[in-house]
Image (cartoon, rainbow over all chains, first blue to last red; front, side, top):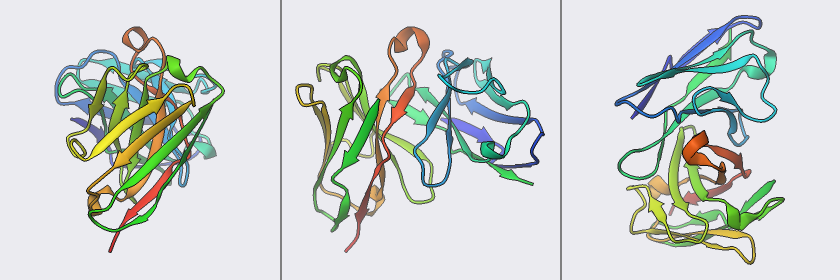
Length: 107
Length: 122
């Protein structure tokens, strides 16, 4: 199980955003993060805990290990307000699990 | 890379539907493919995964025994056969490509289609 917090984060452009994803058991450093805007498919931001996907701006960074992982957006821009999901590969049963999401909204 | 889903629509409880995902812009046979769904206003739920040659297939417990994933590498097509549909299956269904070298780089869905909506209702 992946638990994301907070459920909703209200910030202003230029703020620093810190999103948390906690696993119920230790996972390998295979955590990924996605951004989803209304009416759009998710977009991969970070994989392998800290590697930015192609074309993702440097203001997005990922960190963590064990059970605690973080997505940080260093200085929010208008287009960053969206829902963010973390994702892991399960040990058992086979498959993948997503967190329930954090909605990043404009304050 | 382009992934285009089709086949969604309105179906009655207990009915069946087959989704397709047409892949282009990459060597389809070289990638693990997946279905991920999203119920209205809800989060993402992984549904099924199929390996390059279809030798390894996994399903979420919520669809096991009812859904079947398959692929046609000659036609660059991914399928999801959905039987015994119920209200809980109402969702947008996305096909998604798993990134290469996932065992060393990490398991991630690097490309997604735009999704196709399946509505189960009487």
